[in-house]
Amino acid sequence: MDWDGLLDAGLMGDLLRMAIEVVMLLVGIILTPISALIALTLPDINNALLSIPILFDYANTYLGWILSAFAIPGILLTFMAGYYLFAITSKLAVWPFKLALNWYRALKLGS
Image (cartoon, rainbow, N blue to C red):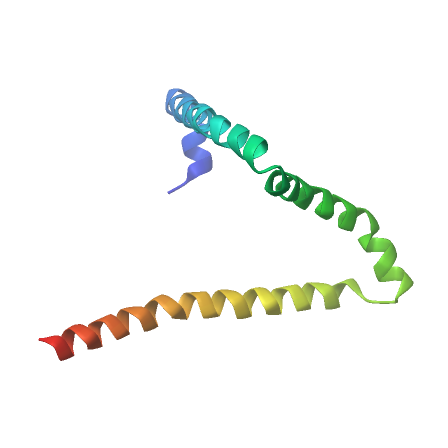
């Protein structure tokens, strides 16, 4: 399906955008009390959740300097991130199939 063409299709695109904005508004309304509850009752978790974007901003600011100071090529970092991403996602992709196979074996032995 061509989403760009659908979004540019005049009335259909406007309706789709409006529906997405309504869903975003409703999710914001639903999650605001939960966020306030976390901020009031669990301030340590709130501080930890707020520090994650700060960590990424800090790392993004100094990553180029660190790479050049230690003479690490950027392609090496890209390769390492891709490797670990592949390793983690492949394990997560295989796990449901193993679980389904174990369920099938358990049902087969039970019947």
